[in-house]
Length: 337
View 1 (tube, rainbow, N blue to C red):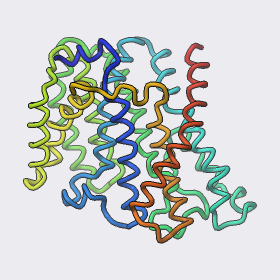
View 2 (view 1 turned 30 degrees about the vertical axis):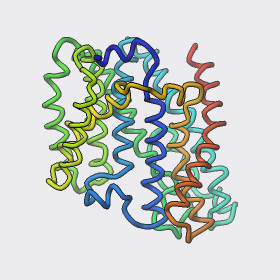
View 3 (view 1 turned 180 degrees about the vertical axis):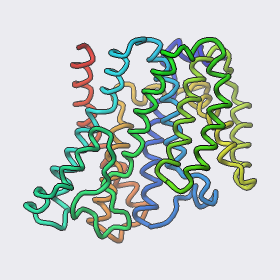
View 4 (view 1 turned 60 degrees about the horizontal axis):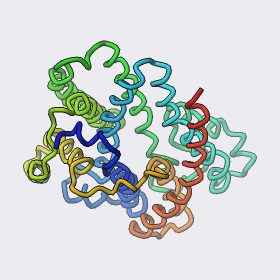
């Protein structure tokens, strides 16, 4: 079966995989925030990978695949960027406002008057327009990590990818073999950027996600030539694991992980297509997981990583239900504008 055949129906595992990835981000953060130690994947790989990184790469790879599909369908800037903005901003604004107006005054070490009178409180609203602001006055000051929502760093990177996808399509680079010809250049640029940005952890962390987004775009454009084979996916996974002791994981993951994701997403004999079909909670869980974890640590400082993960997963899932339902109503209303 070719990748293009998987898009003829709605049978896939994307809902399940996105949900698992959102929970994997919470799991990764639970070790860092609650236990002050690397997550199990980081410990096993000597810091070469984490649960969180694998999850983020999954989001960006499938994002590139589906956003390139959307770009081909929308074709013009208005419908394309309206769809992209409705995907990101309504839920983001709800979570940012909840953090400023509810979480902040509830847990801040400052009085309500001082908290609301601080410029830093209102500066946090810049997260709603993808300008990262990590802290709120007096909030989580005693924690090892004082960020209110450390997961938000990916959203500006994601929106830049949306813009690049639009420019790529409008420049005619999606035609014929050009995307494939540009892939080595993109990989070389990513490697160079990763090395040059070694002193800036935030920017360096964005390099692989952007490359994975591009690879997702390429896979969509060449979907009629990509077979989905279980043995090939297993081989790619073996190579990916074997690259860890060889210290070549950063390069190997770029070659092997995308194919593993494609097979798991579209090639398995049986598919959990029912997950997320009626209510897609992964984005809401991703947005709310980190602040929920921080609140749990604030209330129970001795909480371990396992308990933090389990409680945060349940609470963020519960929070994401009303956020996702309201987001859906907003998208339905303005998506037809």
